[in-house]
Length: 133
Image (cartoon, one colour):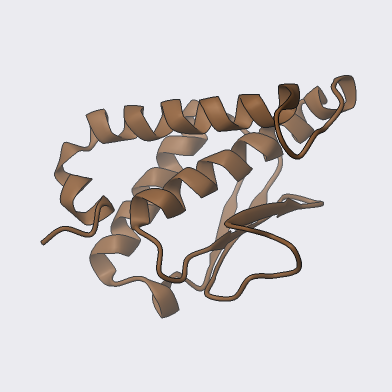
């Protein structure tokens, strides 16, 4: 499984890019995807997305404008979870609701768990994730 990352050099500095690469490796270890994915970081909202969206064929879009890096990571892990749900057939077994429901609740709770676990494993990134100097 491969991850193609788009637009990070336009949006993030070199330290933030290192953190993002480590977070994506962390996600790969924690939530195993079998198919390739593309992660597109953007400064523009696309369609009716709020902070992120997962499109068909492993395409994840994460909105980054005026957001703390911790929030960008949480959105990425949320959409990564949706990709996992799709790849494992979970979404075929459960009805999708935009608010609440099994699919959305799993993505919300798992993304929170992943962020906390990443913070514990990489405490050196805390100030960078929260935009502190």
